[in-house]
Length: 346
Image (cartoon, rainbow, N blue to C red; front, side, top):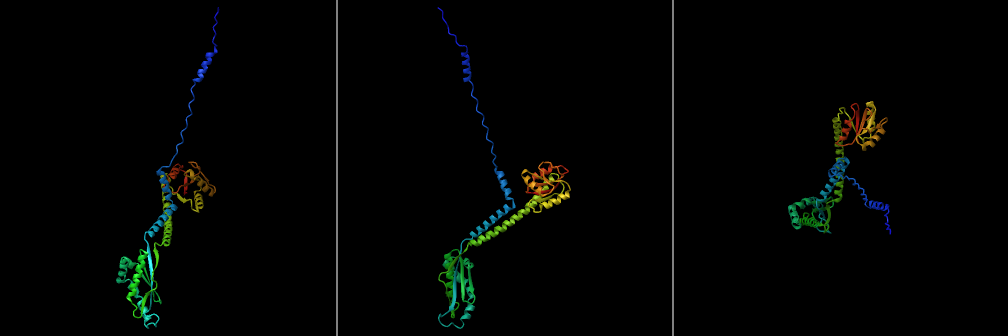
């Protein structure tokens, strides 16, 4: 009896091996995530430098000076404190109303009324009013005034004090002391026109203070801007000459302003005197547009953006300011035969 053995298929181990190889294959690693681009934030020193550069401009300096002076005037006006003026009227009339006046009444009034000014300031009158109101006699005397209305027999008494109550009480007390003095007797007498004085606030005078502040601010702003403009122009010219001298330019170079309305005419005259091809060279890329605009105003000229101009003469466009490092760098790389005709400060 024969026994048969079943043969294992030859390809089964290969399948298993392939399966084992497939299952043991390593998974691919994830792609690395690129780092975010670093963000540049301005430092505190750069921010302060930028603010100071703006503050050096004449318009900004004038505006700052105008604001500061205006606020200072308003502050001084407000710090003066409240002041009130009380006014009362004193009228001279005959001693016996309704009867014929004394023949000498007019002469007595004409000669006596001017004495009311000195009577109101007398120590006895001021002292009694000061004791009544609680004001110092010196302060009460400084705020006291008497006005005589011509040909009317009327006198107006005004007292200025720190409060409405004290001013009104002082005016009434002084007026009654003047009436009690009876200077017109026996021809006449004085009487109060109003039992209650007219009181108005005279300080702080806000409309007047506002007007003074605006006037002072305008003067300070214009003066500061003008002085700053003059100093900036002189400082800019000195910085240009210093930078050119440091770069080896020994010839005198004209410094012009980009805001000059006659800039094109001045440059034409200089270019004609140079008698050679002239190019306009900016010291920085952000000044290229201004250089092209300037070259367009001058016939036969063009803007040069390369570091080494092809013409024999150049007009350099630089920034206005006290630092001319860029101008010195551009002038330092110019060939020795190139002539700097002018420097235009933009």
